[in-house]
Length: 193
Image 1 (cartoon, rainbow, N blue to C red):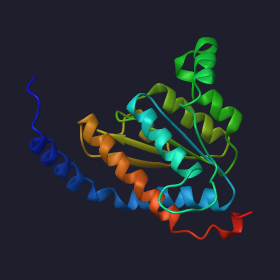
Image 2: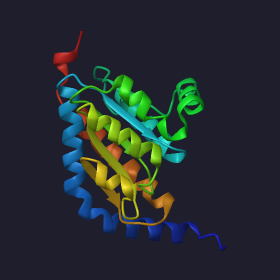
Image 3: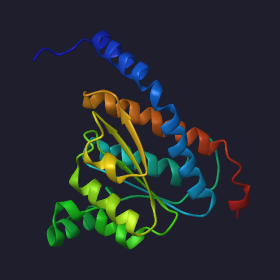
């Protein structure tokens, strides 16, 4: 399989970006759900597998730490990050339950679960969405292709119109940065100690 040149990859990314313009309303709506949750004192849970786990961790760490401005820490937990919980749950309940079991323990009504799955077919992300819904949490999917099975079980679906995993993940990063910019622009003085 020939390796695309950097210029070819840039052209492919530009095409995916142009096609993603239609996602703006979904990105804004999901961003408002995250912001509303945090303003109400709720927490953001994130999850994903492989590269999507890195995206999930990226979103959570920027909320707890900081993105662009100094502001109070915001409640976020990446369910993909705790190797002891993942291996314990995977060993005792199976890989499909690694996120749903943590959602069962941590999610409360009004919280938001953001699941990253480039295919939209990750069984453990789908199970996490189902668990979150039972607990009254809002669910947000970042996917690609056609959104897969997860699209039907989430409240907000951001489905990048591409079949290339790398381009999908690159646009996922743009989306989560957009959310973080909106969150950073919010007055968080009510949370200051």
